[in-house]
Amino acid sequence: MARAGLTAERVTVAGAELADEVGLDRVTMSQVARRLGVKDASLYAHVRNLEDLRGRIALLAADEKTLRIAEATAGRAGRDALVAFADAWREYAHAHPGRYTATQAPIRIDPELAANAAGPRRAVELTYGMLRGYGLAEPDLTDAVRLLRSTFHGFVALEAAGGFAHERSPQQSWIRALDALHTLLEHWPPSREGDSA
Amino acid sequence: MARAGLTAERVTVAGAELADEVGLDRVTMSQVARRLGVKDASLYAHVRNLEDLRGRIALLAADEKTLRIAEATAGRAGRDALVAFADAWREYAHAHPGRYTATQAPIRIDPELAANAAGPRRAVELTYGMLRGYGLAEPDLTDAVRLLRSTFHGFVALEAAGGFAHERSPQQSWIRALDALHTLLEHWPPSREGDSA
DNA sequence: TGCACTTCCTAAGGGTCCTAGTTTAAAACT
DNA sequence: AGTTTTAAACTAGGACCCTTAGGAAGTGCA
Image (cartoon, rainbow over all chains, first blue to last red; front, side, top):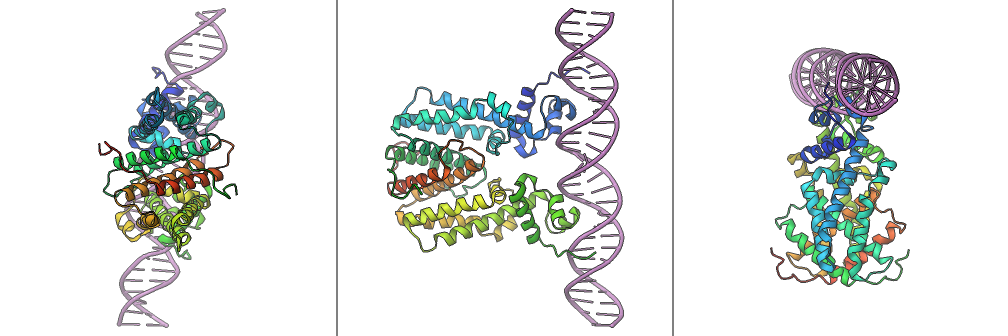
C-alpha cells in the first residue's frame, strides 16, 4: 500500500488542473482521486468535502492571479499600469478557465482557510495602487476600483460564455475598452445632484 | 396514474424557480421532479437531459431579462435610457439569482431551441438602440456595447459573489458607475496609434 | 522493538443521471 | 359509444458520485 504522498495542496492542484481541462463543474472527488492514483475516500483525509475542495481551488486561483498581476504591474504607472493589470487579468482567465470560474462562486470558503490566503485582499490593494496615479480620492477611489474590476471580470466572463458573437474580434474591443477606461479615469465625473439617494 | 400535465415549459419554470431558491448548481432532475410531484424519469419525455434543462433555464432567463429591459427603456433616450437599462438588468439579477447564473454558462444550448428564443439577440439589439443617442459609429458602437454589457454583468456578478466587502454600499458605487459610463459615452475617445495590433 | 499517528484502503448507504420497457390515461377516429 | 392510436408517466435497473466508518499498513519516535 505504497503511500501516494498526498496533501491538501496536491489535491487542490490536481483539482485545479482538472478544472482547467474539463470545466469546474466536472471536477469530482472520484476524478481527482483517479488522477492522483488513489481511491476517492482517501481524499477526505486532506479535504473536508467537495465544496471545500472547490473553495481551495478558488483560493489558489485568486493567489495565482494576484501574483501575475503584481508581476505585470510592478514598476508601471498610469496608463501602462492599467493595461498591464487588465491584460494580466484577462490572460490568467484565458490560461486557466476552470480555476477562474472557481473564483466567481459565491464565497463558501472555510474562514480559517481564507485567513491564510492573502490573494483576494491583495488583489483589491493592487487595484487601489494602480489607480494612485489618477489622483482620485475616496469615495471615488472605491467606486473606480469597483468599476474596473466589474469591467475586467465581466469582459472575460462574457468572452468565455461566447457572448461576443459579432465578427469584430474581442481583442480589439478589449483594447478600446482599456482606452475608454483610461480616459474615464483621467476625467472622472464629479458627483451629480441626487446621487446620494 | 393521473397525468400531471407536464410540458417542457413547465419543467423549465420549475427548474428556474428551484434555481432561484437554492442555486443553479443544486437544480437536479430529482428535485425538479419532486417539485412537480412526478418521478424523475418522467421528465425525460420533455427535456433531453440535465444539461438541456439548464440551457432552457438560461434561455428563459435571457427572454425575461430582455423583456424587463425593453419595458424599462421604452420611450427613453440618452442618459435616462442608460440608467433604466442598467437598473433593469441589475434588478433582474437580484430578483432571480439562479436564473441569472444560468445565463453565464458557456453556450451549450440546443441550436434548434436557441433559434426560437429571441432573448439573447434582442438583448444586444436593445443595447445598440440605447446607444443611438450618443452618436457613435461602427466599430466604436460594437466596442461600446461590449464595454457596457461587460460592466453590467461584471458588477452584478461580483456583487452576487460577495466581492464588494468594503463598507461603501454597492448601490452608491453603481450609481457612480453609471455616471461614469454616461460621460464616457459622451466623450468616447478616438482610436489611438497602434491599437490595430 | 513497541507505540502512537497518519495515510490509505475496503465496505457500504444513499443520492443522482439516464435508458429501456411497461402500463394506462387521454386524444383521435369510426 | 367503442376502438385505435399516441404519448405521459411509471417501474426497474445500471453506472457513477459523495461521504462515513472502520481496518490495515507505512512512518517516526521512545
